[in-house]
Amino acid sequence: MKDLTEKEKRSAVLRSISTQMEEIAYQQKEVSDKQREEAVVQTRIANEMRNRSEIERRNALEAERNALESEQRAIVASQQAESQRVVAEQQREEAEYARKVADTLSYVALARNLGSEAVTQENTGNHDLALLLAYTSYLFTDRYKGDVYQPSIYEALSLISKSTRTWPAHRGAVKKLYFTNQERTKFLSISEYGSLAQHELKPDGQLVTNYLFQDSQYDIRDMWYFDNGMIYAISRTSDLLVFNPNKTVPVIRHIDGAVHPIRIYSLNPVEAVIVAENGLFVIGLGNLEIERSIIVERPIRLSSTDNGKLVLFDDTDVVIITDEAVTEMTTLKIPVKGVTSVSRGRDWNTVFYGTNDGTIYMVAENGQITRLVGHRSKISQLSSHPQNKRLLLSTSYDGTAKIWDWQKEKVEPVNVISSGNWITAMMMVGGEYMWTGDQRGNLTQTITSVPLMAETIKKSLTRDFTREEWNYYIGSNIPYETFLDR
Image 1 (cartoon, rainbow, N blue to C red):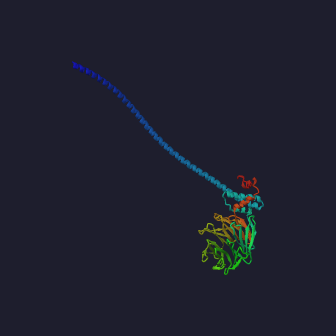
Image 2: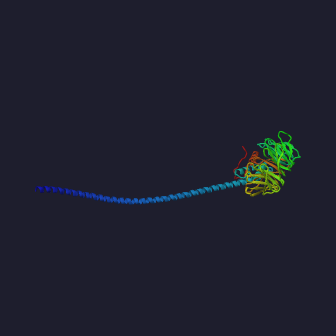
Image 3: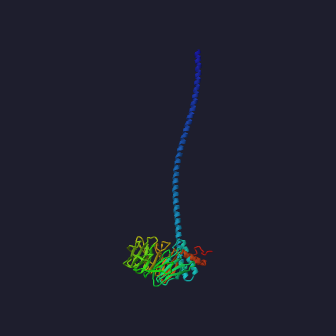
């Protein structure tokens, strides 16, 4: 009974514990159910959030895609805008350029009209107005990069600036002019009446002449000047005249065998070459003896030099070229007939031939020939401009000297001198002056520099345009200018 009582007690305890455990289990189950329910809720929430996140991700991707498309559209629009801006800028520049071209053409055309009007006013005795018109013509042409050698402008400046001065110097035709100092204020001249003169242009503009030799039995055709003052001159009478600066009387030596000499050259320090109609005669400068000679079959009518060699022209339009030692000759046929003068362009690729009828032929390196027409009589001399390789100067027996811009598409000569006498000799003083000699023995100095003529005219201005004159000749739409130095 005691054991049973103990077992019953233990059983009651166990039942109690079991009951408690059951209650705990129920409690745990409730907790677990709640947790499960919460887990379900959290799962549902998580699913909802995952779904929302997926939707947002998709929205983000869509937004990104839309943003990229918008960016591309913006880039394309920007490029189109930039392209349109560039086109607009180009169109603006083209419009600006077209306006400038139109203004330039307008001013250049106005300048030409003013040049023509200046000549008219000068010829009618209205010198003050002619000065203003001529200077304005130059100013507009120079300012708008026009051609100052256009005939109506150049000839107006030449006429109104009084660019030409003439002095009588010889009895017969002047055959050659030769500078003797670097400043080019002293020079020599010879004439066919046997005179050799030394000239000096003084700062006050006076020409002082000293005759070194005068004897009409000689017909002096050419001379050669040496830096030591020695002068060698050749007469058509086959006489060589040697002038020593320390002696008053020249040494005269007859050149036997030479028929009608026309030129003399010194190709080296110890020898001179006399070109006669019948050939070449080489003489020693010391003893004046003939060292060697070359006789030709056909008469020589013209000679020049090219790269240290003599170039001779005969009646059949054949060019004879010597070697530098003047010992051998070669012949070459040229495509021009009746050559009276020859000059090589400063580009060394073009040769100019002046002819008996006044035509000038321009022969390019490739053989192309261009005719320059403007003179009416024999071309006496051709020369490239010493400063502007585009320009050629020519003198003629028609009494004119002309400037040619031979690189133009349409070549129009400009009259530098117009006289009633044959122009037989010419030389240039830099790019500013030209000296010429004529058949009557006159020496003429002519300004050839356009800026110098314009400056001369400006210094001669005594007044400005009146407003009425400006509006009438220039135009009321062009801003008024004053030219006098205040």
